[in-house]
Image 1 (cartoon, one colour):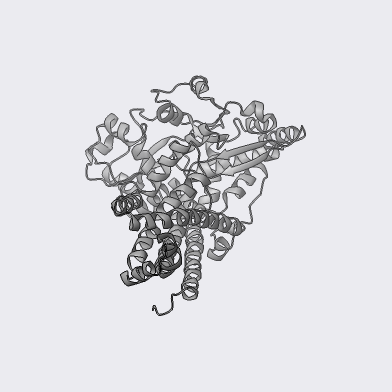
Image 2: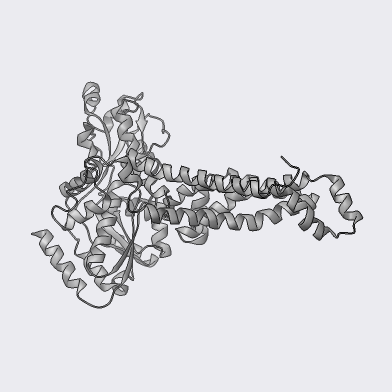
Length: 495
């Protein structure tokens, strides 16, 4: 009955006016993907032009995307808004959270109907053997091995506060992806992991959720976090989103999570099944490798990947070759230039992306292009410098004897002779950038990394392979193209 009421509300809102545009975002875990797909579907059924930017990363990145206007709305949890975003203690009501978000141009509302709190869990058989039922009991077993997600370790309402509240003696572990932690705890490689209370895998893996006996974790009621002008800017889309209020209880959310994680349905199929009974029922229990590899998104992801690689490479060539020439010609500038491009290469990719998001106040293609451009500079600059250094001194003396000016000597003699080395540097940058570009999926720039990110979230080997294989094929193809170019432009007399 509730589904019929919801569909009726969406149909009524779709009948009014021209199309509106709303951009939905999500974090990088199964439930957020599903809820994001439901929001996109709700807005689309209301008659809006709805776009979905899935798997943008952790809270900080998605919230930055919302503030910058890169997205209009995403599913969030009241406890996260209070502790992580607004730095509030206790369990402030939704109205209070909305009031405090208003100065930022944001709003919180539309409670979806379920609470998905953080928790710690153990294999039930091991917990029973050790007599562990509550979080307080963990303090009696300092040797337990923890496997906690990176975000839980870093969050104000995560491991640091929990450890203080319960006086836990265990050391902070290295971060472990949430999807992989289930496999690790099942195999006995870790003893304790963080979970969400609506995780579908809790029952399947036979885990015991430890009671929060001191009430550390706040309520994590699922709500919408949105730009405050959205209801006025896109009233029909907002009507469709508002119709979701109270429509998803905990049991239903667990079933939706199970449809993706246990039954092999896509996020879109799970979202469609929320609105239409039986939708996606034909999905296979296990996603096949070939079906995942040649999925309908392959062409779009290939285009996005090529755009990132080729555009960043072209910019790197345009700047890197002149920088290499300058480093060779101006002795005082050589070491600073080579050192600068070398230091850039040592900066971790995700750290550089986080910096660029903050500096540009946006996510998506632009920060990804700039990051790839910076990473592509080192091989091009170094090989240009090395290629020019390898030109024989006698050749330059002959050019001077003929009266050629320095500019003509560079363009007509030195660069052509250095061309094979320069081209090798460009080839190296291109191949490296094909692999590095996969990280762009963490900030909403698409490409093959989108499959890898989703595969990690679901621990889906087929999706992981479906993202890795095309990237490897593309790298080999680009290498082949450059090797053909090297043969075509090889300087006579050089091997």
